[in-house]
Length: 280
Image (cartoon, rainbow, N blue to C red):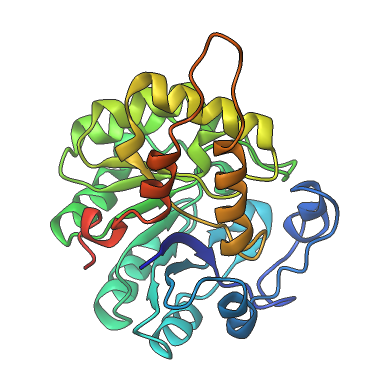
């Protein structure tokens, strides 16, 4: 079974405001239709793919997806989808949204977007959020790495901030999105240290040299087992992500250096991520 740990629900145009909507064409290759349709997702994924689906909340960047919509979308296909709630801790009422999303809506993890929302994820003021997540076994999916949104401060996207969180909350399961690109080395340093911290490889395949280089660092540091498969749908698809990983695995490599381990790439594609995140 293939597990996609990073897919989205966007109801366009309702969930996407400015500047997120107009600047999303910078993501890669021009305009992308961000409207999520289950039939499109299923048609571009291997049969039986299971996906974690998140919305997103970042008032500063113009993104706000109601958790109830995510719960309804995931609840319609409980054999295929696992829903996460989202939080923007810069906004009043986030603590109530945390409990409502978990207890009332039955959502099973938390998406945080520190750069998009404009907050430091290592701020000790957020320890209540992390302690709640750890106590209730709610894994975190945290955006790390760059963005196309002009108002989003890059300093809050650095993976190193999550090192401090993991030190204070060692039982908390976290996934650092996008391998922290272009700060992959920093991301690798963080996931290598902490038993329950992983990185996903979503939204990387369309920059093939960067992906090859990132996976070469992963191989050198011996942390293949800390990578989880993700797509970032609708920015790309599961099938395209799988094909892209296999394509860089087929590259002979630089003279004098071993190529990427293609067996490890296959293990990454088929990683039993739900068990690792306590969701199985």
